[in-house]
Amino acid sequence: MATYLVVIGKTSTGYSAHCPDVLGCAAVGKTVEEVLANMKGALEIHFEGMLEDAEPIPKPGGAKSYRAVMKDLDVDRYFLGHVQINTAQIAAPTRHS
Image 1 (cartoon, one colour):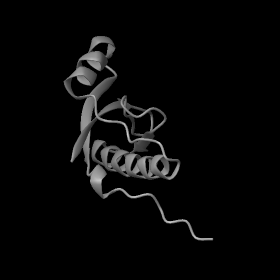
Image 2 (image 1 turned 120 degrees about the horizontal axis):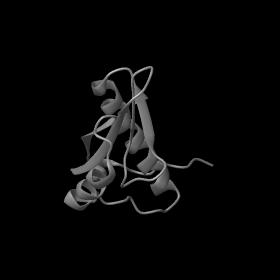
Image 3 (image 1 turned 60 degrees about the horizontal axis):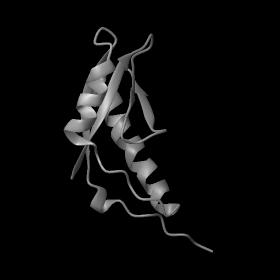
């Protein structure tokens, strides 16, 4: 099980989230719980695509990522969360000819 840092921001319609350790992966939701669940799903799909493209799954940055994000985080607009992904269970989709 890998734990990925998620930066969550309040929007006019709910929340948005991104994972600093996984560039290009983001999610939205109406509640914090929904945005975290959507982020978990987005990461799983993103990782499946990476495997399909023979790219390695990024490792979580751990405390180093938290320190880097907290250094410049506007705490009036953003806060941190995390999601756990079982990267061992993610498999690239089977291609059918």
